[in-house]
Length: 160
Image (cartoon, rainbow, N blue to C red; front, side, top):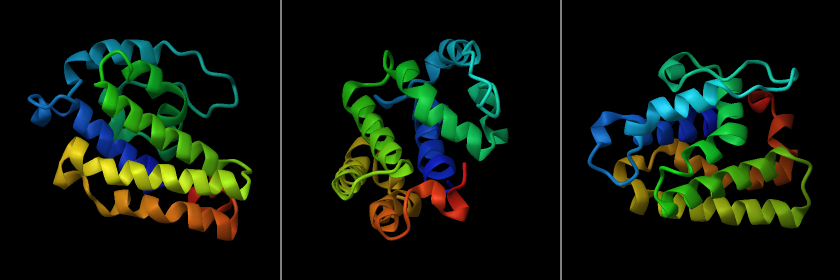
C-alpha cells in the first residue's frame, strides 16, 4: 500500500502534474482540469469506499483513493496525454500490481515479477535519476513476497 499506491503512484502523479516538470515530455499538468473533470464525473459502484475526487485534493487522498484511481480510473484518463512509452510503462505497473493483488498461479506471479523488474529498469530512463527511490526499488521484491505470503491484500499493511 505505502510503497505502491502512496509511494510510486503518487510519485508518478507528481512527475506528470507538477509544474516543476513543465519542460519534460511526460508533463501533462496542462491537461489536469480535463482529467479532473472526467475523474470526478465517474460514477462508482456502491462497494467503492469513496467517489473519485479532484487530483488537486491528492495531498488529502487516503490509500484506498490512490488504489482506486491507479487501478481503475487513471489509465484511460491519461492515455490521450502521456507519451506512448510513459503510458505503456504505467500500464505495466498496473498489470503487475493487479496480478499480485489477486489469487495468482506461480507463473503469473513470476510474470508480475518480470513486469516489475522491467518497470524499475525503465524508470530512470523515462523520469530521470531522481525517480529511483526506495519505493521504486521495493517493487522488485513484491513478487517474492506474494510467493511467500499470498496476494498483497493478505498482508496487514496492504489491506485495501
